[in-house]
Length: 157
Figure 1 (cartoon, rainbow, N blue to C red):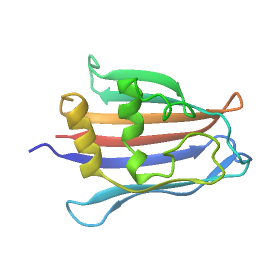
Figure 2 (spheres, rainbow, N blue to C red):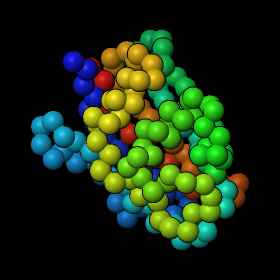
Figure 3 (cartoon, rainbow, N blue to C red):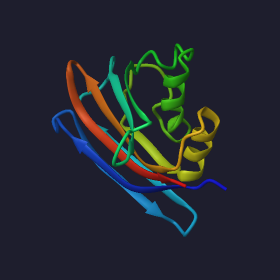
Figure 4 (spheres, rainbow, N blue to C red):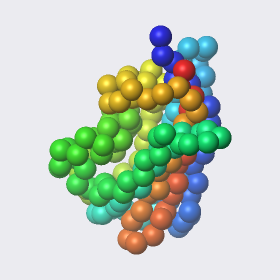
């Protein structure tokens, strides 16, 4: 049976006048239930346009078979779910988040108790990912500037 384990999370506010992180943590409720929670406090609302740069990397000493990097319009991703990669990337957290509608965003951005079991299920339905250590990095860009970076490290067995 496949197993996914979150090993680290780091949220970095690159423009504290725009955003700050009230919460950004990984919690192990018990041996089998780990989850991530993030609360990004927005200081300049409403958000009427933003882009997200998602990158998925597989750690290794040699060739990196998984190295994916894409930038998408965050306001349009829910209007146009025809791109399977964009749907997959937002689907990793959409169910556990209030980032699940089109613009404008007049509220802080929250990912609440995103469990490893849900993320593993999403990975399993998209592609057969090989076992290994992964880094999922996201840059949140608005008004021409990179405002925040969120990196999640995980191990897939």
